Length: 101
Image (cartoon, rainbow, N blue to C red; front, side, top):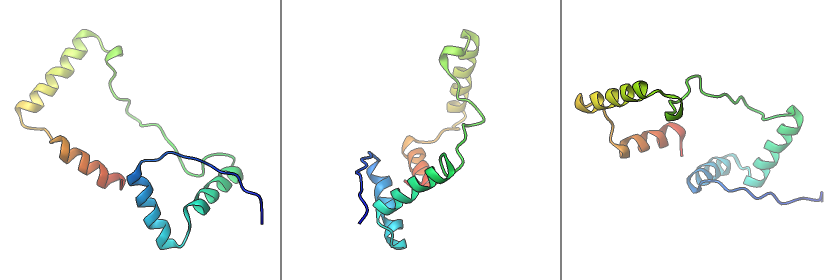
């Protein structure tokens, strides 16, 4: 049997559980899936899937002028007045569904 080394990783419990369910259906133990990922990193000499930064950068308070900041606050206030809002619980649930976590 080949020598092995331990790899420790911290992941969100929901993500781990969701991945384990899929891997169990495929008949692949988690340790084998991690090994497959690492083999692909070596073979492809990088992450074996595309990684991109978002095309739109989120606004940062540190780069806004006072006028720009005030304008963004006004937009937010108008959204509230026009009821263009989403409850936090609904937003979080949508994100969990979207990203399957």
